[in-house]
Image 1 (cartoon, one colour):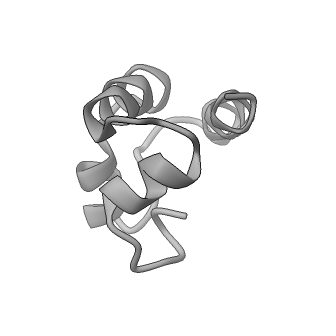
Image 2: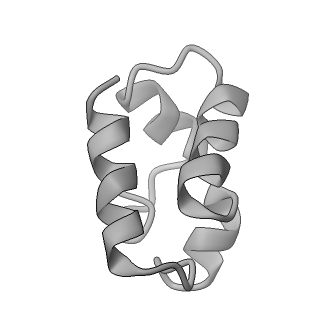
Length: 63
């Protein structure tokens, strides 16, 4: 969603069930290797291996 939409980070956090965007940002940084804003500014990739990104996606969907 960060790479494909113009939704704010707060909107994305809410969509995934987080009541506070700060919790989503911390989780994203832990799983993705960088904060969501940096991920987005890099064009939707963090420089982490693709498998790490899929782990992140599964973890976020599981919330």
